[in-house]
Length: 355
Image 1 (tube, rainbow, N blue to C red):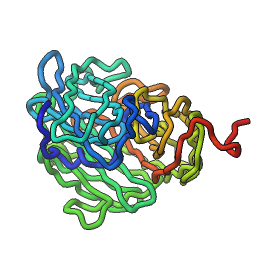
Image 2 (cartoon, rainbow, N blue to C red):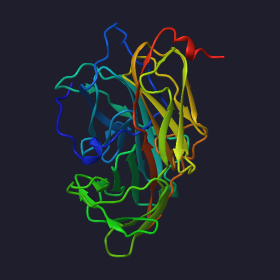
Image 3 (cartoon, rainbow, N blue to C red):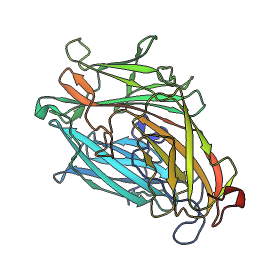
Image 4 (tube, rainbow, N blue to C red):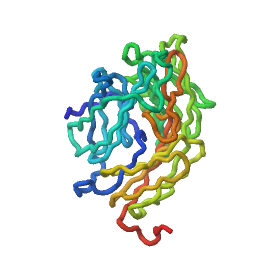
């Protein structure tokens, strides 16, 4: 295992990305001990394409973080300890999107990282497009968390011909009816934040609002890539209720305001235990779970809008939506609800009995 190092970019420490269509059971782990909360572990490794380490691959966990590989192909994610973590990787070069995926148990909190390497394969769900006619790959996302006045916008630009990050682009995001905000480059990403007081440009993150991305790749007005995306509405979990007790099979339900369309929803249960359960919903407001481990549980709900850059997902578009300036890529947006804590018991109280 490789020693834990400081995260190489702000994107690695941002709020969770619902990358995989997975949610794990709550309560006890496979060895019968209670899964600890508030503890951190890390996962690291090398991402390779045709046995060669690649720089600029995006690595994400369903319940934790987003990182970009360095020149040696190395990444590191900080995740919850003793948790089942779904991981995904995306890398585009020569107009082809390559992906990787794994589900691992993070192990105990430690100063060393669990090793998880990836050997990338072509995505069967659609690639970067252009058949090699594009030179730059752009990945961009918007995120906002629950009822807090917080959020983040992150953009990465990769020069596929040089296998290097583009560090001097002029990148702006403009909310509908608002002013353009220029993102700040730092450690591999262009960033703006909905948090006041941070040393990054402030971007209002408003639910249901459309944002226009403009990337002037050489900052000279010659290579302009653009895309438009809408931040989904505010998600509120309506069941289970806070502090309720449910059986090992139950529904997570939610509402969303404003009721803007979303590509998909992901219900995530934590702490995690082995044997992940499906929590992916294309539409509607219900995700059903069965065979969930007993114990304390916290549910969060993520709403996703835009292309699914991590590879095929049921009923979800995987085609890139960024174009122009010799670039292709993906611009998506997602929200995370406020968490709801409840308990899972082997038998729910009679008032929860299903008809």
